[in-house]
Amino acid sequence: MESTDPFSVWCERIKASDRKAFEDVFRATHDALIRYCMTFTRSTPASMDIVQDVFAKLWEVRHTLDPNRSLKALLYRMVRNLAFNHHRDTKNREAKHNTMADYVSDTVDRPDEVVGSEMLEHRLHEWIDELPDRQREALTLSRFEGLSHDEIAAMMEISPRTVNNHLVKALKHIRDQIRAYEPNLLSYEG
Image (cartoon, rainbow, N blue to C red; front, side):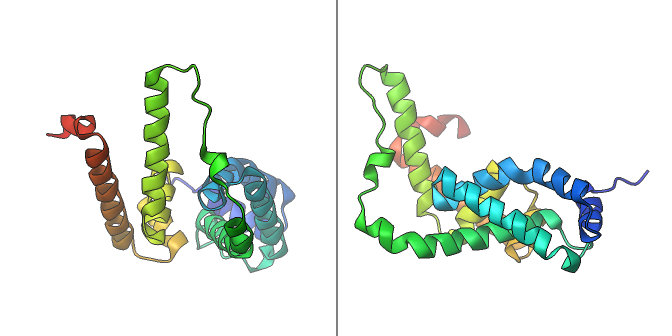
């Protein structure tokens, strides 16, 4: 019994201007695409706008879709490209404003454990941000969006082996940072 990828079926139907298939793809990917976009924009409203633009563009170019190519990877690639454009367009404005207030959390009257956990989470985001762009992108797609190596490879237009190399390097960097920050945190690794 052959398992058919719903994205391939949706791609064919969207190419034929099937609005229901378009809605199905939207429902299946919308939230994940916003989360992915947030890794670039750090802004929910901007991410929502970008994803909306991606779906509008997808509908505009539906007649050019190739059902033999991953629709899911195409959507992620479109989000990435628009997010990079957004970043480029807002870079100068962001440089003029101090955005550190966005990252400061209110820690008054909170238990030390919660503060420590939040500090570690904040540091983890910083360490991920330190990664080279391609490593960060591969890590985000793999660990936070749940894409397979093959899907990431198609999305990033690289080989699955290169995806694996990016992930190995990214995870090593993060492990090294965690060991330097809190040596006992990874003590179970041996």
